[in-house]
Length: 471
Ligand code: PMP
View 1 (spheres, rainbow, N blue to C red):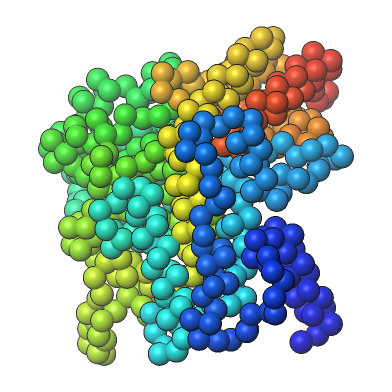
View 2 (view 1 turned 180 degrees about the vertical axis):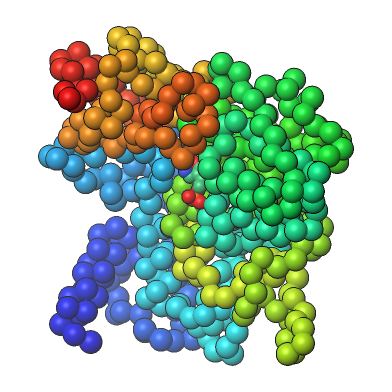
């Protein structure tokens, strides 16, 4: 070990003590570095115990929010000498200490490859990985952990379905319906599938408020429709689509439904069984979990019928030179060594969300959204796009005469992180006559004061000076 590595180890230990004091309560001897699972369990359990109990009548008072904020170490950072105000949650959420700690703990004490190797750490890592699968299944109301496939993120989940289910069920003359709201991740894979098969992609339009035009959807559904792909929540407009109703209609027409839940899972209760959808895709990093990990939920019967997406280790039962027999799902779709630690961290994030309560999160973020909309409405020239009756905590806007990138840069100088650009959803911006826009997106760890600071800063910027660069 070099000096630097030694310093790093001491640093991690010091930081872990700072963020997880409960783990070091009695400051006893360091736990053994390598030991049998039984010997190390108590320390793991330190990360595994639930968050400090919140009152049963938890209703997100300022004290509750302060308690939640204190779970996120990064929120204590300053940017340009100002407290960080993170309003870019739709791009990625920040990570609570319990998730960071779970990742550290995995690498410090459990690290091993999984599902093979007859040794203690392999068993421990496999157990943690599979436990994470179970926690995620519970969070989204999936009937069994076997319906939960670990992937890299929403993008990979959708590509998996397009490649595997697409190969099984889509051919020339068929149709795939996609709403006008979609992120490119829920559009381009379907374009590629159509190009491969000769199927046609059909656009489900949205109305001026940014809601799915249900009459148009109804008239587009036909026996030719094989797949309907829809965002649960639009990453640009915040529209919450009526995914259960859309699924029922698609099923009656004989089509399967993929819901892109990237913007839903950390913001509202999600119950895939109640929605009835066939596939549900989401990303760990947008729900307080690590990057590089995400989930594809699939209806068991469909997953069992689907061919592998990628081939390699972990996904096979038996291989001869002539042919291979594949494992059942979900392992059939997890070829090679995945992001094991990230999966374990995502399991912790799922528990964290369950402990706060997604229903409470939804109500709280709705209050933040209303506060933001009320405050921004008074800024001259500011236009909010997306005014759906059912909307989650995303406000996208432009201001006449001002450049979106400049607005974001000026907010950044004041410590406020928002996103400017096309938000990987060019068709929907175009629908509203824009090339780019500014987006503020909220999470349960934002406060009303942050919303006010954001709105005040914006008002000052636009009132005080022209930001549009002189040519
Ligand atoms: N769908 C939606 C609605 C999104 O907001 C995003 C991320 N912005 C994605 C898909 C893609 O997610 P990822 O990059 O994590 O795969």
